[in-house]
Length: 175
Image (cartoon, rainbow, N blue to C red; front, side):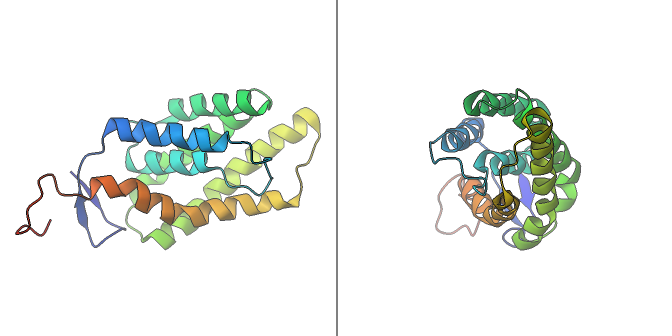
């Protein structure tokens, strides 16, 4: 069992269901593929979900999964092949590098600490885009990492919810 230090007063968590883990990643990918007109300031839900699972399950979701999902996003958006793959790979590497330290903080502090990761990811994607096509998506792009950091507590609560239930329901047991 895993101990969630920064979330709810050191509550013990059940092991994550692998089906739920991969379904959440595929669901985030599907959400990012919806035709919203792809506004530059729109947060990347797949990136937030990847960082979450890199922090909480680094052995199951690693850099290879981030590269694969990045290639899928590149193909879907018609971007330069490797633009999202590089950004997601960097994001996953940095998330795995800080995953032990990050769990000691509250959700708001975690969001503040992963903001630079999202900024670095968007910077890599922007550099690749500028080098390949010379097109600048606009200044609203600066809002996307901030919105992703704001989404961090929401995504954390949603994705940890299935692990917080008791394995056997018992009204006399406090866990």
